[in-house]
Image (cartoon, rainbow, N blue to C red; front, side):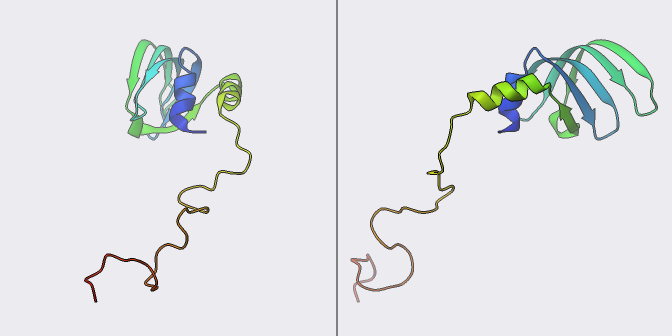
Length: 116
């Protein structure tokens, strides 16, 4: 499961965000982008020294995020939406190549060399 697909599914849901600085934000996710920048509304911010702030809306830059807490029902929904794989996915570039043996310097092919 990819983090961005999880965040996209969590739009409108309450989430918890912990920053690298130690601050935490709890609010409803409005939207997110490919850099994991997020907008929250109805936010409660807790500073590192345990002071609380209530804010109507917050923008959080993605590279400052340390941890994201998403409700379990959103995680379950994303798991259900993912396509099922039955073990025939060989991953990146692995397995079943067409055209016989590839690579190497072996002879016998109709290479496009310098004509020696």
